[in-house]
Length: 367
Image (cartoon, rainbow, N blue to C red; front, side, top):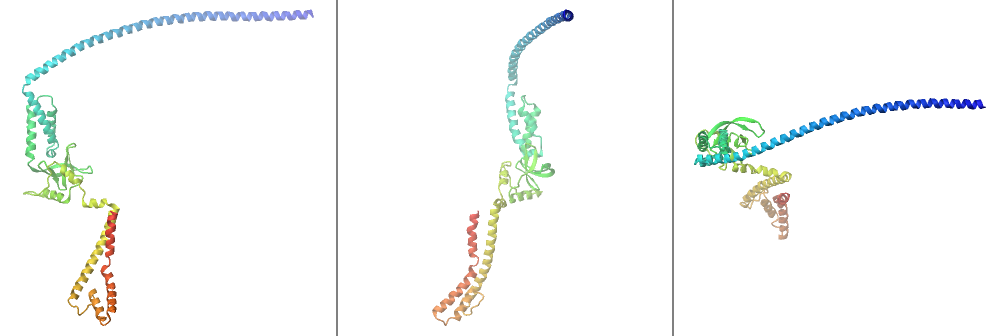
């Protein structure tokens, strides 16, 4: 028993020795690892310190550069401010010198600009520009110019006014491009009547000064006006009547807005058509009544000239015939016979009259 216990103790001491040896090896490795990490961290810290110092130097250089640039811009701003103030003074002096040098030419500058502006407003919208396009460009340039007009500019203004004045008294024909209502274009012969109207074979035309286009009216005026225009266009000599628009298109535009009788009629739509049907039926009945009553009236008139010989082709003759057939009867019987014959004749004469009266009452209510 004692040997067994000694053996167990020996085994336990050996296992403890082995465990202690293993733990010692692990601690050595850990110590080595700590030393290695310490060395690497020290190197990393030195590297970071070096980078920080270098970056700090770069930042300082950038800051110094920015400050230098700011100072340069401030100096430039001060210099430009002084130059601007000096230029303002110089500009005012030069403007005064220019005004003194212009003298009375300044008044001519204002007058020419005003005249060019007025002429541009008149010529640009004139139908004469349909025959002579591009006249308003020079006038617009003169009106918006800030310089004293040159001699060619003044001659251009004079020529434009003279052309407008001369052409306003002429009736001229010329070829031009007409933009139709569907957008298509055609080359047509157009007659210009002064500064009033443009006329073609199809009627009146208008000049769109914004698009510089000659266009037909959206709707031609009343037939008698359009027919005069077409007749005037075909004339080659002498005098011919024509309806003129002295307002340069305003009155003609109002005339085209007027609705014709047919437009008024179709505006009534179904109600108007119904009234028309009643009108036609009433007219037919009235026509039939007029023919019948005229015929009956002529026969009665002929019968009055020959009362002794009654004719059965008219109401009076038939009434006289009844009288002659019953003249020997007593007065009461004769009266009854005559009343009976009158009742027979009345529907023939009054037929359709009540229907016409009914139509006359219904038609206004439908309207």
